[in-house]
Picture 1 (cartoon, one colour):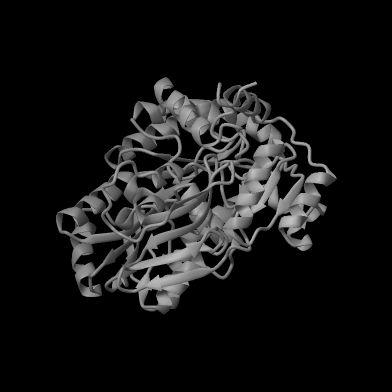
Picture 2 (cartoon, helix red, strand yellow; picture 1 turned 90 degrees about the vertical axis):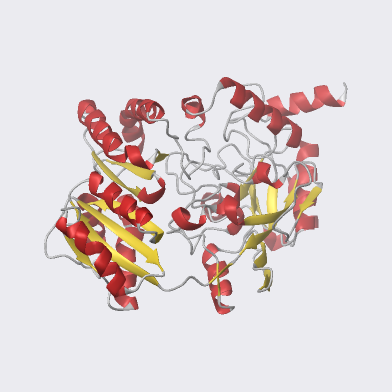
Amino acid sequence: MNSEENSHMLGQHLRGGETTLIDQQHIKYFQGILANDAVKQDSQTLESYGRDWTKKYPPKASVVLFPKSTEQVAKILAYCTQEKLALVPSGGRTGLAGGAVAMAGEVVLSLDKMNKISKIDPINLTVKTEAGVTLQALQEAAKAKELFFPLDLAAKGSCHIGGNIATNAGGLKFIKFGGAREQVLGLKVVLADGQVLDLDCSVRKDNTGYDLKQWFIGSEGTLGIITEATLKLSPKPHSTQLCFLALNSCDDILAIVSACHMQQISITACEYFGTDAMNLVLGQFKQLQNPFEESYPFYLLLEVEGTSESMLESFLEPMFEKGHILDAVIPQSSAQENDLWAIRENIAEALFASGPLRKNDISIPISDLPKFELALQDCFKKADLPMRMINFGHVGDGNLHINYLGTHKTSQEEFYQLTDQLEKEVYQLVKSFGGSISAEHGIGILKKEDLPYRRSALELDLMRKIKSIFDPAGILNPGKVFDSLSD
């Protein structure tokens, strides 16, 4: 059998959902590469590292490995390809699409111990970091050098930089700085066969053919394992001003954002949510208080850069006069500012604690937000399901998080069955607006059947061909994005 035929067979063998068999011979080999305590099979570790924040899929990992270096990762991947062992990369496991779930006896490769920040360069404005560093640790390291790393997520204390890059994370500051892709200058990636692809680079301009690092950003660990990265830093932002606004409708959001653009006010964050989300957070987090004396239909957290409080007040005054703002709070201390941000950042946790939950994130052109919101509410009402729909999101860049919240009387499995048809209708609606079915959470397991709502048959065929080049044996995160190279 030639190598091409053999690779094709391995890819078919490791299609999503098939079970990988791990025996003691494999365990002994891994222990020879790593310390014994870096090869774990206890039930607690398998449970914890075999799942992500997606609640739909039960974990079933066979072993969890904790390498400390790129060289160790390379040896593990070369062996897994040789032995036809499926492997799931694991970062902070904060994903919401099932991209880090091991549910068929896979090897889980955790980057937890690859958590060193090796160099911060204040002249080049770069940082070199291993993939297992948390986003918060990187932000704090940059801050200690009077610099700024702009990627910012509610899960920053748990999520890993490697995972942020592999999922092309977006976050709170996307409107100003872009997402993970915009921060990456260079990568070090281990390919499925164990070869180390050194794409490390600190230069800002490099026009030397194909930019291979782009294939791995947003690939969800299906093309290679990111072990190190060189990322952009920024000077500390000029003073920022935050305001918490009460609004009557989504049209008011567009009016405020448009006015900022017209007056050259630099928006660094623009986050919206409704009164249902506000009440959930205040009910779960008793230390937080509603900054207003009454409830309003919509709220907007607007952060702008290089604007004094008096300038911000001057901007807001005509917005009040035109009826676009019903009430406003400008924090007078860092503690009050943190409390206002905490309302927004704790929405996801409050939702998880409130009953069966199905989360979705979509993006649409910002100018279509009011029309889309009305169409979405109409779609939900027609479905007439025993649940609530609670939305919030990074409205400044068109990213809306749609949340279906059931009651504790409904099991998670029953709940997902109820929402399956609704999801299809919502995706069709998103498609009709020229939007995306996944703005920042990725595809994973959860959305792979829905890719045709966004990607053409030709695009999907090219994606599979790219996968076959980088991972012909199909060992890397099988069952994620699509089931196999031929589906």
